[in-house]
Length: 433
Image (tube, rainbow, N blue to C red; front, side):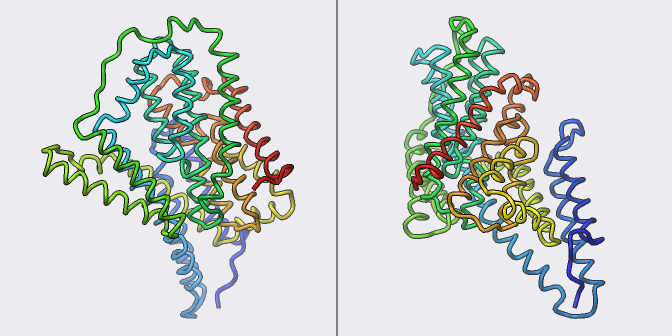
């Protein structure tokens, strides 16, 4: 039999070294001019290293069984996550192709909301849409929108900060990768996550009030928006297609909650309905939508990033390093461990932290798993580099940097502490679950 693997063994240290090097390259991706999916995929080499260890550990034909079991479990969790994200991304790109989101943004401008009204409406729409179409997508949609209509850079930055925070508040459903991961890991059900709605929305409201009262009021709101913006109309078939997409997403949720169909299969079924409707539009209405082009717009680099980091985390868990995370939960109150993990997610990718928490498999109740998903999800808002929504905003507006985000630290802290405080009141004091 092979020697049991412990974290401080030569193999454990090598696997940790590969992971740390990859993580450092991810953190400094801008300075290295390297897309973060590349070092993430490099982390997968840990699996081969573990395989080499088992090869030289003896001649027992059963010695590879732990490695085979680890890979099978990792593939199972990865399939659900990657399939769901790819299906959802495809739906969003189909709607984008029909100008659905662009027309919605222009409709907001036509309402004569003004700078303050636009600030609040965009934030609210992000908070309500991100749980269903992902924080990354809402950050992209509304980030581009405000960049197109704003005349003042300070106002643009203020709205972008609001967009990051409100997009990450989608943790109360399947809007963030952290909430999706705890669902796919069977730690919580979708109906459980709905209980996070008050805390997530309250946190966003607190941050928006701070941004309004202490930042927006200092600006001359009459001179913040461009006088004329190009009109965007929904392309033919766009409105009916939007209704079909909404039906498909809602139907997927119902299938999962009522019939216990896994969410990735349910959403895949919904996407099948959508593409069949597109075929009908082409045959009956002569409306051409090239699905191959929309498929190419799916961010495969992002999906490969998830594959790499989750596999790397699985290797860390296999050699015992994540046992220390479990010990942390056993030593301290889980509430405060989750609070700390939320703060750490400001500088370490929240997907890594969520994967670490799930794979360490501490004995937590549903309420603590919900807190874990929420704190790690919204904790990414503490710095602009801590969440996919923040990274998306930086790619849209190059002037929005780490230093820019820190100017809004009071608002960001209001979100983080406000959401945590409401959760504590709801679950620990009122026991409302």
